[in-house]
Image 1 (cartoon, rainbow, N blue to C red):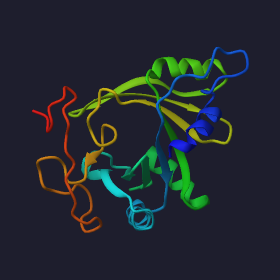
Image 2 (cartoon, rainbow, N blue to C red; image 1 turned 135 degrees about the vertical axis):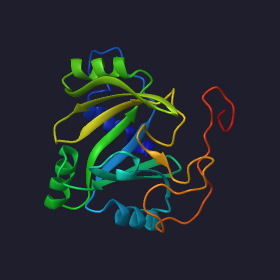
Image 3 (cartoon, rainbow, N blue to C red; image 1 turned 180 degrees about the vertical axis):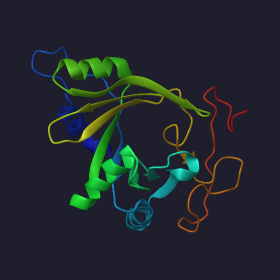
Image 4 (cartoon, rainbow, N blue to C red; image 1 turned 135 degrees about the horizontal axis):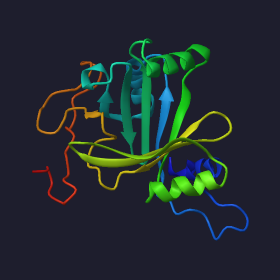
Length: 209
């Protein structure tokens, strides 16, 4: 996934232009978010084909009534598969329109940056279209700063700073096999039992408080 970072940054307007002092310093490609018709089936398919592990889930059970999302991870890779849980809500309608037109498609290319506010201004000043100004979101694992821009072609790019976050992906997602519970969040029977997610406290104490 790291190999794709340069092309993502070029498309997002983050890699500098002639005359600039240099490209914006960034971390790496953070995640690829795919819109699919059935996230549960797609997760099983991607897991079997690519050897990825499911690390987090979001859906009606976690307070997101319109969508179902599975986060799959591997060395240097994070893929998020999202489908509508119901078509009535705005997010559900948006996702339902995508898979109806074509097969699995890229919805968002997320880029890790050390400073979302600076990266957002840098990109917008160089022609990127703003979709969401920088904002902070949090849950019990900490806080994440996000901003979203668009580039020609319709794909979104979300700028992510998760330096203050110790969770599995983003606020609103629950670990699969959450730390200390021994339970699985989301539909059961899809994923084999594995090592539960371990929370590492941002202050350096393994397992949190």
